[in-house]
Image 1: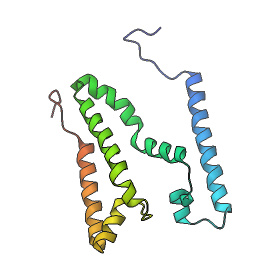
Image 2: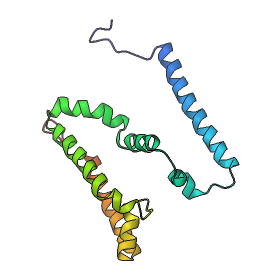
Image 3: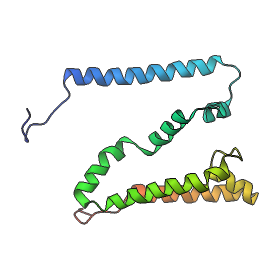
Image 4: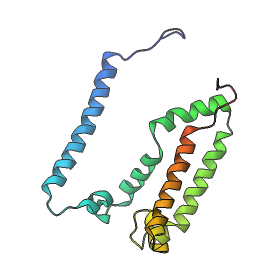
Length: 156
């Protein structure tokens, strides 16, 4: 068992499992890329939207994975450890936002066969500028959230 001062490093088994995971992921990606390349009837819309005939589980898994990243899994416990459990309120807000979006926005956008809310802005206001402004606002908002607010114990 490692002591507190000892630094743990990858062992041979760790490297084998890591390489195996990367290899399996690469083989799956290459398989589906070749399969799509050989299918002459596919186009970009079919690729991006899954032909609009995907089942619930793959779609739900895709949405979940897009929200959960390694940074979130590693960073959330560290944030709660250093700053306290107030971060939990953020999670409650996110859950409520997801539920409200599913109730309000999905029934609006799904029958219109739109892929984003930005396409809805363009269609609603009949203006490409509205779509562009919405996209720029979202980018600025996301950039502000990633930058973060320095905590009290930072050296800034």
